[in-house]
Length: 165
Image (cartoon, rainbow, N blue to C red; front, top):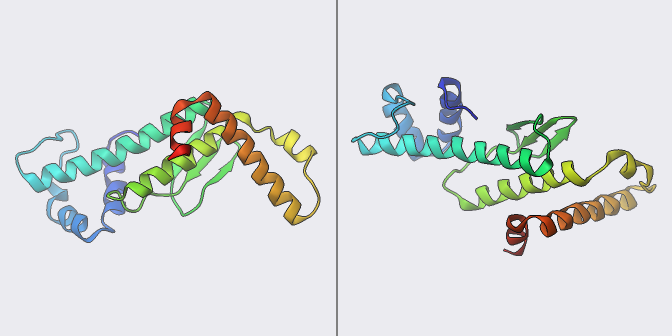
C-alpha cells in the first residue's frame, strides 16, 4: 500500500472510530504532512506513527500473501467483515482496532490461510471429488483447509509457529 493522500484519508476514516484517535485526527489532520513522519509535537508524531503502522502492516500482509501463494498478480484489499476470494482478488476484513494485538494476529492468520489455499488448493480437483449433501461438503471443505494449512506449516516456520501459539 502506497503512502499518499488517498491512503491517508482511508486511514483517517478507519482510525476515527476510536474516540481518542478521532480527537487527534480532528485536531491535527489539517497539519499532517504524510512525508514528514517525525515532529516535535507529540500528538502529531503519534498520529504519524499510527498511520505509518497501519500502512506498513497492510503492505506487509499483502507482500506475505503474494510470496506464500506464489501469485504476484493477486489483487489484495481490506474491507468488510469476512474473507472473500475469487479469481485473482482477495479481500480480508478491515482491522477496526489498531491497538488490539488480537486483530493483528487474526488478520495475519486469515492472510496466511488464504495464501496457502491459493498455493495448494486446486479448485478443479476439489470440485471433482466434492461429496453430495451439505454436511459432507462442509466436512470436505474443513478437511481441505486442514490439508493445505498442514502443508504450509511443514514448509514455512513462521506459519508453524503461529499455529502453535
